[in-house]
Image (cartoon, rainbow, N blue to C red):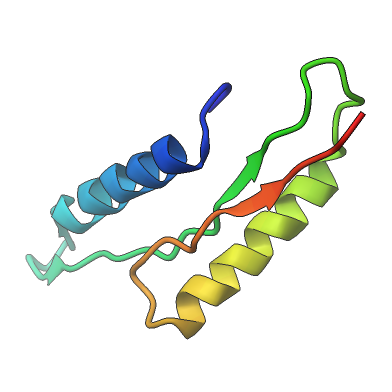
Length: 87
């Protein structure tokens, strides 16, 4: 989500979690499946004219957040991991 700060990113992930929890999945045999998710959140606060970050760096940070969310009890978003590059 371009130009999204930590607070807005957190609200966005909460909306995503609510949508996942509310999703109704019905198996072929009629069984209802309850869905949950754990989300790792990374927010870049780099200056606009800085070098772009590599995708593997962003994914590694999000992965750290994912495992933090799982350790905290699952079915939640992690606190944002902030990446800040100075000029």
